Length: 176
Image (cartoon, rainbow, N blue to C red; front, side):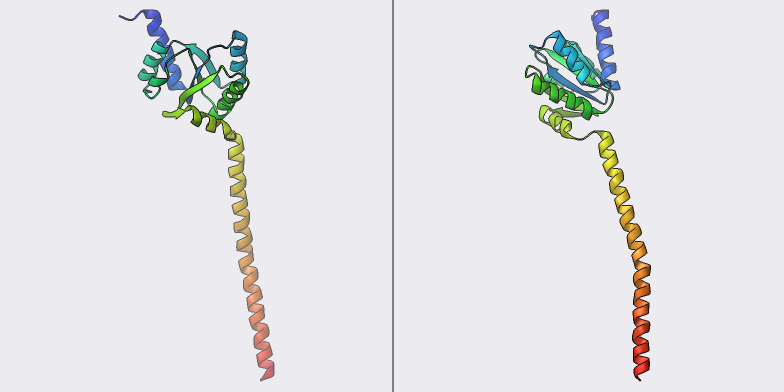
């Protein structure tokens, strides 16, 4: 029978897995408490970094419907639960890992899909959601401008064509 404190910890972790958009598993062996504090700040406001017990976290992940992470629960493990933009937090982890090689990104999950460590690094290379949305809006605006120019060009081209035909008829009519 499970102890109440362990059952509560599993329930809390399962809730965090369910409530987060993404979760990234890391190995933190060799990092100091001060470095972990710096890492937590670098993840941004939309992420919570927690040092966890592998067995309890594995049970919690399975309860939350995430079984793809089972192989990653070995060694000292910490999980970054991300509730906001996963790109921002992935960048924070990547940048911190560059400066502190003791932090190893093991893998994670994004919207229920398993991610390898390389995929998390690719995610970190993306631009933020706001930048991508502004680029998309700019592309739509550009397409609208092109369409407007096309619609304006058609009537003016028609008028020039009619004027050219009228001039040609007048030349032919005057020559006969």
